[in-house]
Figure (cartoon, rainbow, N blue to C red):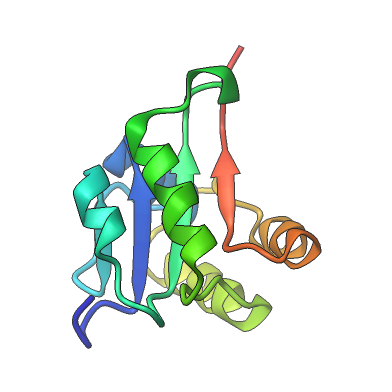
Length: 124
């Protein structure tokens, strides 16, 4: 993650994750999206990261398993309530739709589990 990247999203569907996390249909320059397992393994400590998944747990991808393993090594940073508020504010300024991640719910879940936020969205 470069200094210009303030958030990393690990996902198998980048544009869908941008809509769900940021509320927009593009990846801003300050956001990095990781879609390959080997990139996940090399995430630097202190990387602010969220995982966004679209398949059922029973069908976890290699990418998600790599994210789980990297989280277990420690050193990654999850989103704080302040970070989530900033994302919401940024989204509103940049045309975010009304749908997207409920940042307060996601952060509360991460604090309960002690892990970096990882949200699953499975339709149907």
